[in-house]
Image (cartoon, rainbow, N blue to C red; front, side, top):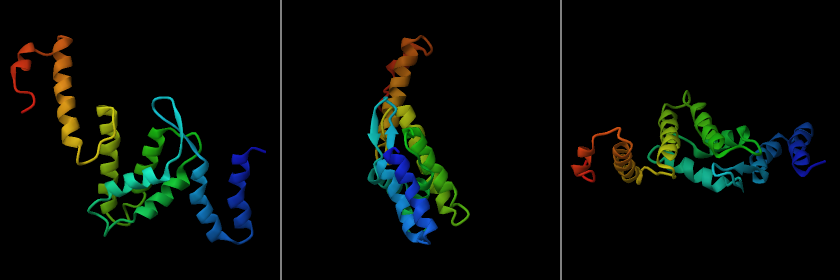
Length: 165
């Protein structure tokens, strides 16, 4: 039997022995064995700390209303081996959405996570709230230049101070 198959059976065995709290803690730890498929085709071990940091950034200013560890538990319950980075991002958003009825602040966290996911697609790199404006400006200027290059936009647009706009 493959190592991952054996590990997937452990929570079931623990639960059958009426040790539910141990099964819950193991369910969180199971992600330590997961491989994530990155957008560039590479594979990497699931980085729980990186996901936790992403959640903490999204919850900034809302710490009194939301519980990061609660969201993290939900994320790890819904993740699986060989998930893509996009699926991890989706799991973060969906896990957060599941707590909106508990407190509306979770909707703000979910919105921030969605903005981060979409920004990563547009800017081709990870973006934080602090670096968003810079990435947006770079993308805007590049979009104008490409539009002119492909004859979709009037070249007079390049005479404007694009850095200022």
